[in-house]
Length: 88
Image: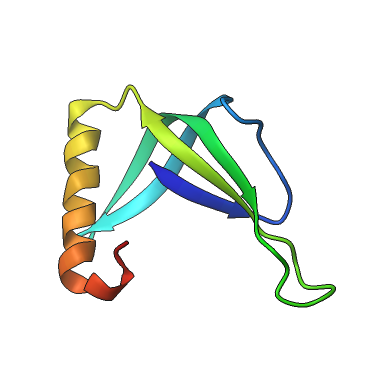
């Protein structure tokens, strides 16, 4: 899945959508398009009065093609190796 952060709510919980994004895997750019369902919407507390509001939308990818699954797994492994401190 993915986390999409915006300054205002864009979707409703359980809404289905199609998400397109570009990934770079071993210096090769690929455009990915996958189906997703909004599973969670959380409003972050403002760090200070007047600060921009962050709305986090938790997305679950659905009906992902095998080739896209392989690319996503490779991207995660690459991230774990290159930037282990950023992987949760």
